Amino acid sequence: MLNSSKVEDLFYYNYKDEFDWNKTLQFISNRNIYTSWEIEKDDVWERSYKIKNFLKDLPMYEVLYKRDVNKIETDQCIRCKNGVEDWDHLWICEINELTIKEVLKLSISNFEESLLKEEKHEKIKFLQNINFSFLKILYEKSEAEFTWKREILGID
Image 1: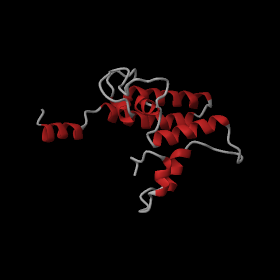
Image 2 (image 1 turned 30 degrees about the vertical axis):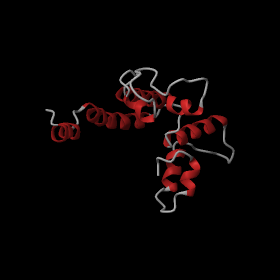
Image 3 (image 1 turned 90 degrees about the vertical axis):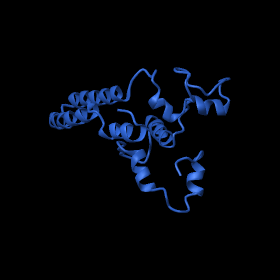
């Protein structure tokens, strides 16, 4: 179902009720609190980004090439030139400026700074306790990856 190329497909071809619209709405609208029915411009942009990210429809070279935008001549990754730049490639491209680990650490740091500005010291303490465990997991060698490489690929 998530391989649909258009939003309409999600509505029209959901005859088996494969798509949980309540969870999707919660995912797309998380962290957005409203005091009225009116939506601000920034919020519309954020929701649009979340929806496009969820549907893997952000403007990657693959999408821009298909749309014939700005005379883009190829759908290949502009950084590594080693494959089509689609949503999945964006996360595994070896030439990216930041790794997923760096993005996560930066996000945690930024969130902690915002809590400091708001003087929410109890929440900071809670966040630091969680971060310790989270970062430990992030930097541990994956047992699943090790097993997969050894069992499936025959690599030690």
